[in-house]
Each structure stands twice: as structure tokens, then as C-alpha cells.
Image 1 (cartoon, rainbow, N blue to C red):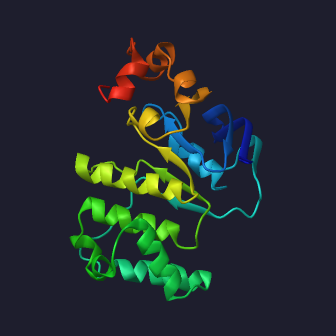
Image 2 (image 1 turned 120 degrees about the vertical axis):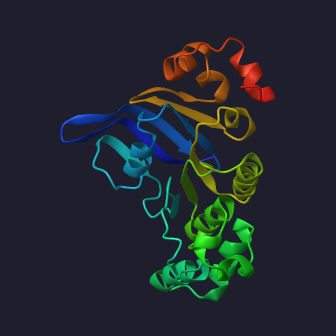
Image 3 (image 1 turned 180 degrees about the vertical axis):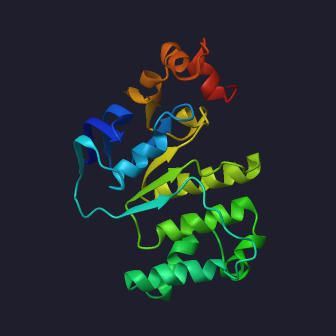
Length: 236
């Protein structure tokens, strides 16, 4: 598969403070990249740098440069009293992109939700339902890459697994996924590559190469013996 993202010696500083350092990675079309690390490790900073929202040092190149990218942020706070429904969000974005109703229908279908969910007030939706609307919003415009920042935070296990199933289907449909998560099990049940961050990048590669006991200890301060077997079985 062709390489669509190449990053070499990437550093991000804000007011002279290093937020992210020495990141090197190559993402191929169709990859599912899992970004792991403790809180404050620079995971969100990385996504914002990849989106061009933060200045950076080093080499960062998307190929082609016109690649369509969708983004689901970590947290979106919505006033429960706001008279807004999911349909309003998608129709507003469609208007900005010059897209018609069929494009909205396609995004909803790929996100696995129907128009009935789009008509109710956003403040009345469950966390999982609202997260699916955000994913549909990101899918509008038919992105080739989807970046998600901890999309299952605050969701119960069935709702979280529902989101992961959706991401698996999108990958089968040809979407490259870059996912920030604390779920180590995704390394073997979803990801093709893993990037481990602790302000500086610790490693990048296939799960078996990246998730060594030494790396996990550096990330979380706990030594995981038999990490690969535990992660594959879902015991970690």
C-alpha cells in the first residue's frame, strides 16, 4: 500500500515548552494506527499537528496534499438546552462543502445511524448516539483518513464496542484510521500499527514490535510480563 503520511523528527513546542518530541512514523493507506500513552503524553497534540492546527518542527507530509481528512475531537460540550439536532449539524457542514442530501445520507449510512436519530435534540441523546453523530459529521465529504481522539471516553462497554465495530467497517471500506485511545486491547483487536508516546515518541511499529514489556513499563510505570498474550486475549 502507498504511504500517505510521513513524519520525521516531529517536535511541537508552545511558548518554548516541548509538548511532543521526536515523532517518526509512516502511515500506509488502509492502516489502523493506535496512539497510546498516559494523560499529558501529547496524543491530542499529535492529532492537532497532523491537522495543521499547531505549528511544528521537522518533516510532516500527507500524500497527496489534497487528501481528505475527517476529525472527531476528544470532547464536545453541548448545552442540553440548545435547540439543536443532529440534522442541523450535518446540513450546516454540507452547505459549507456545497454537498447535497445524498452526501448526508451516505455519511449517516456509513456511521450506522438513521434520520430518526438526527431529528431529536442533541441534549437528549446518549453518549454513544452523540458520538455516532460526530463520526457521521466527520465522514461527510467522504474522507480518506479518519482521526479520532478517544471517541469512547465516558461510554459503557457495549456502546464503546459499537463504535469500534463501526471503525472496523470503515477500514474495510477503505478508510485509514488514526485512533487515540487508552484501550491496550485494541493493539491486537484493531490496530495494524501502534505509536507509543510519553511526550517523546517511544516506539512505532506493528503491535508485536511496539508493545514490549519495557515500553509498557515506560508508558504506565507497570511491567507487563506476557503482555502480547494478555492483550490478545483481552485480559489487560
